[in-house]
Amino acid sequence: MILPGLYAVLSPITVGFLIGPRCLTGLLGGAIASGMMLAIMMANAGGAWDNSKKYIEIEGAKGGKGTETHKACVVGDTVGDPFKDTSGPALNILIKLMSIISLTIAPLMEGDDDWEVWYYGLIPLGVMLIGTYVVYVMFWKETQDITGDPSSAGKKDDVENPVDEIDKGAPAVEEG
Image 1 (cartoon, helix red, strand yellow):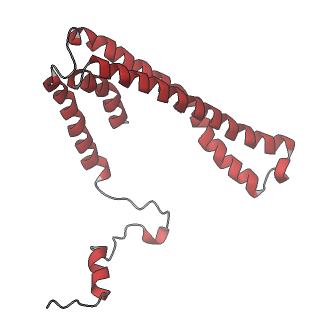
Image 2 (cartoon, rainbow, N blue to C red):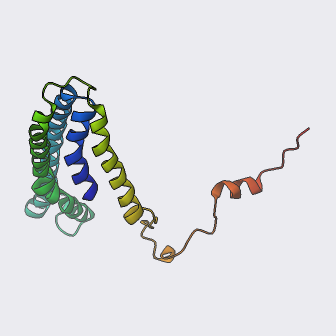
Image 3 (cartoon, rainbow, N blue to C red):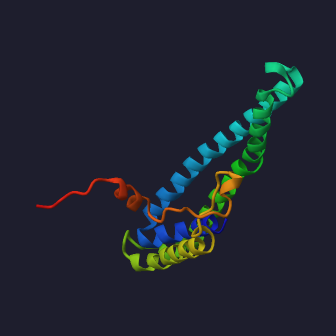
């Protein structure tokens, strides 16, 4: 959650100073429109997954409890609850945060045309890039096996470079 928070706070500052107030208006409009659509989709999908499990358990539809359909609906309910309870409403907070930050920096951009003080926008952009690199080094640099295969736990691939392995089997091409 480090990067989403960093991007949510610094994106309006970067766009506002790097490009200008009109582009910042477009950023906020896009955030509101896409955030609203995503929040509605998440709330509806979460409710549908939750209601499908209840429908099978209460009405006994599709064989009722204990069937493969019920097991699938339990998994869907596990995903659906966070969708409708947290993710959708959290987008409202994101939109409000971006709007408040934009209102806070608005006096600093008063009277500026687009691209007039672009060099100030490089500072938050640099902070975002440095933050992204730090998070990459700390958390994402080491690849993890997410296949769930217990036999591959802790093993590294035997092939250092798959392209080299493919080239070994290819016939040699003579120059001439």
